[in-house]
Amino acid sequence: MRRLSWTIPILIACASDQAATLDHIRLRADGSGFEHESSGTRFTPVGFNYDHNEKGQLLEDYWALNWGDVEEDFREMKALGANLVRIHLQFAKFMTTRDSPSPDALTRLTRLLRLAEETGLYLDVTGLGCYHKADVPAWYDALSEAERWAAQATFWEAIAACCKDSPAVFCYDLMNEPVVAGGKKPRTDWLGRDLNGKHFVQFITRDAHGRPLHEAARAWIGQLVDAIRKHDARHLVTVGMVHWSLKQPGKLYSGFAPDLVSDQLDFIAVHIYPKKGEGAEALETLQAFDVGKPILIEETAPLKCGVPEWEAFVDASKRIAEGWVGFYWGTSAQEYRAMGGLQNNIRANWLDSFARTMAKLSGAR
Image 1 (tube, rainbow, N blue to C red):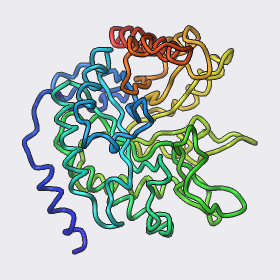
Image 2: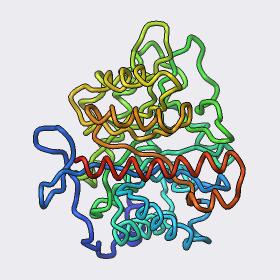
Image 3: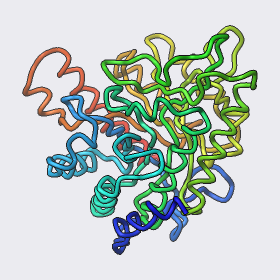
Image 4: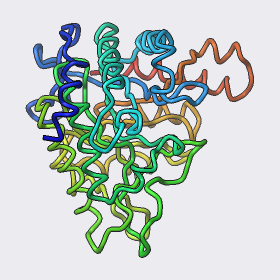
């Protein structure tokens, strides 16, 4: 009975006709990658993480008052050669209580789906973000593990009900860089350390309670996938894995070992930033994520190495990966150069590199 309180407004918010400007994407029958449903032609996802703007604002911070910026950014990403945009939806912006999604947020998401269809861009819909700690409601942090997972499942039910018919949805990414707490002492916080004021790593447990970490990860994935499949049996599902999801003695381990959870996912999404002079090591890490499912490098950039070395890594990764996603923060390369300064020139060079790389990757498939 409780679910009816949010099902009705969702249907109202998301019930307009879907424009048939894009073809749905599915897995290839042999599991080697992705393809368009109608034509069967191969689809190589290349594009950008659209996680914040140049001011550090998240999408939900500005899409209501500055929708024109969103439209302009989507057109710029398309002009750069992207066919995919990864959006990062924040839990607190979509859930007013543990049981009640926000109709306003779902209405704006519907508008974003239309924009993606109109511009010919697919969406990697990543959810459950808590990137700005100040936005996380106290009631959410106070929930038990079981209650928190249930609230997260309600979030995904709402998103899937809204997105289920849109051909613009490439996939649902359950969470950006989830981690199972495995320390001897329970954690007091659900979030990992901040990076430039944002918390991109999130814990799905604060105490493993003696469980093998991958078992907790599997239980969590299963609950959220079931929530999505109540409404959407079509679109692909994955989870954004840190590179230290590999289980290696003496090293950090997220609990999301690809060989132990991949059967619950349609493909593997991994985040890899090659370090200077360690391109071979980055490729070895990527190879370890090859567990018989297509691989999307969902985050990558020349953040820890130079542009030529990053381009070499991406080129070499073509034998392993099926897609690549960089970053776009609402500022073009020309605008960066006009602003001047070393950091702006570096970002301009990144964007130029992404454009060159995407053109090569799209043409090679």
